[in-house]
Image (cartoon, rainbow, N blue to C red; front, side, top):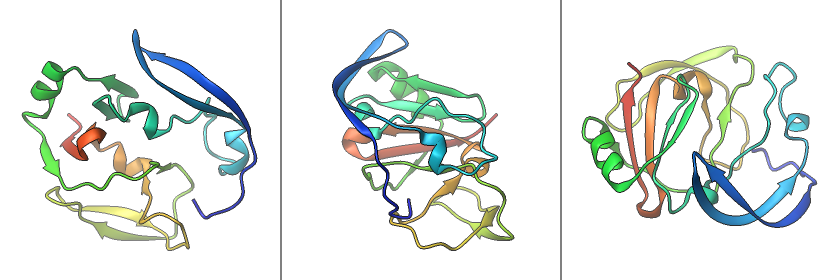
Length: 155
């Protein structure tokens, strides 16, 4: 996220199946993701790049620890009660689980209620990074192929 060099081994396209659904293949990188994260972060098994989900609408509920792959019918039902947001699709999505920074600020995302969140100013190569503590307050539904994003508060 700060532009530091990460070295890894590339593997050929590998199939990925989630919940019985096969996702489009792409290259796989093998590296120790924990080596670039703060020492107090709980262990991660890996990172899933957004390109694997480009053609597959999905819902992310961090508080419930679920990733739901949506069908056309389930997507329509899911977003019916959610707030549609303006979104810009990038080639990656990062959620920070680092230690709490020393300051806080009021964050407002298009149409969602404002939230007091920890903030830290750093030079990064993204527009911004939202912490897991903020992201877990909402259920997020994405249709990356069309750049659509919806959110609803966790119940």
